[in-house]
Image 1: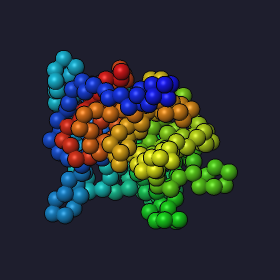
Image 2: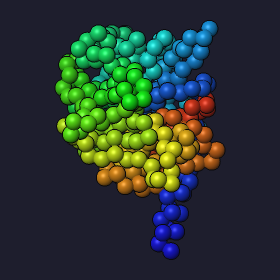
Image 3: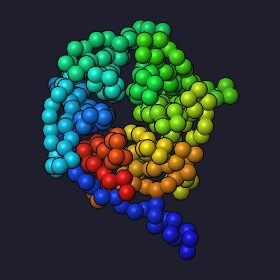
Length: 288
């Protein structure tokens, strides 16, 4: 009886509060900017060339949806972004470089790909820490047993403050992608078939993997709520895992017709924003 109750709780569906239509498919990143704006990065194809489009959409809680374009970038490379609260500063990847733009769309190079920060690695994901430092997940562009990744923390001045690569001389990452900082400063990273969580100093806390009966766990977008729970999108199984800060699965988040959830972000009220790979809408979910 107890087991049945736990299983039922894990499988509960959640309510969709509203949708935001951004009019394009293939979403690659999604960020909430703490001032009511949701920033969306999508990939389009033009003459066979991928074009990443980043725009900002105003969220109005009094309406079903409200849209206001306040930033609009086209770039031939790079898709992940992060936001710094001071002056609504946007940071995004372009040609292996971290670019910075203020609210008036003045764009500057934050640091170049040739810098010693990166070496032979390419940035995959970005997140901003509470301290103002930037977390960057990196991949060496190799495959199979040669595929390796790492995470670096870059100070607000552009220097490397931390590098996370191994645990007890063994590689921590295969191909890290999306990244987030928890409220307790844990660093949470989506990797191949697993979520890797380290403490603020880069020491491994745990790996979260699917159960043996659920081997196709494919984590992508990741975010953390006000209770330090870690929320990660699983594209293969069309559901979202919510785990606590100690690796225990709390529940699966699911809603009607969910299909290939790719990216996530969360607002001050713990409302969860979900971008699906083949959809043109962002679903806003109740935290209940």
